[in-house]
Length: 346
Image 1 (cartoon, one colour):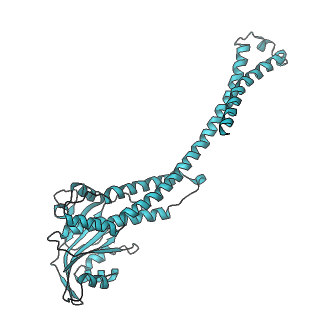
Image 2 (cartoon, rainbow, N blue to C red):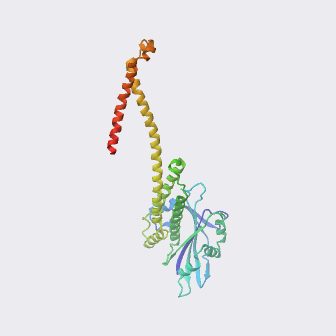
Image 3 (cartoon, helix red, strand yellow):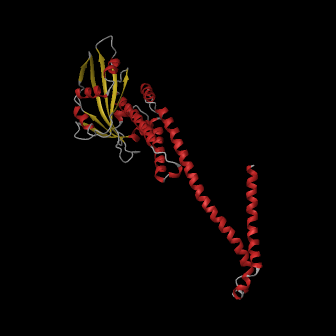
């Protein structure tokens, strides 16, 4: 006998759901049946990405398919948190089923029967309907414009009452897989505008993407998971199955390229602003020194010749000579510094 855990991902659960037990992961006691073997750090990461869960009541129905008995052990709907979502996005809802498969044929493995008959989503949904959860699927399918994802994993050792924990861990890594796909999709469709067209809005999108990548790393790539060896191997297997470390590394490299482009845009923008300020300071400097020389000559005296005999002073070449001397005293250090800069470049 083998155990199969499979899940459907929806953007929302709506309608009148079948009878279920609702729990919030904010209540630490409520999470015990799901996460008791896990470490405190893993539980915190789990609470960071999931808000609540619904455990649906059933009588462990069984279905016979191709000389194989399939028994439903648990059906739980996990509701993801709404952090890091854009305006038009809804939180993920993962509908997780834990089933036992027992083959009556010695020539056929139960896992092979699952892979051969339930590779696509339609057979999985038909199986769920045979278990009596067709109404639940109808509630999940109200948003027809949303893509329904599905994934599964097989376990070849007895869970011994840990079905809820393995289902929760599976939901956790499946959500990490969905989050990684969405990060890649956002990066693919993010508009890469030229430097001249870079705006504050486009820069904020890049900054918001960094937050999602950090959340991906700190939640789903944690190595502190559990002291249970089978659960620890299961976590490592799921991380490898969904390529979470590789997806994170690739997303990080692409995002760093986005940030480099944003940094170049900011530097060029600041350089253009500083260039304008530098030109203004240069003009004011050029004007201030001659005016200072001129003020020193004429002083502030209403009986000065500049006020009494203004027309004659205008014709006096010494006034212009004093002004030019001030200009030369200003330009000489500037020219010297420019020449030194040229020599350094050579």
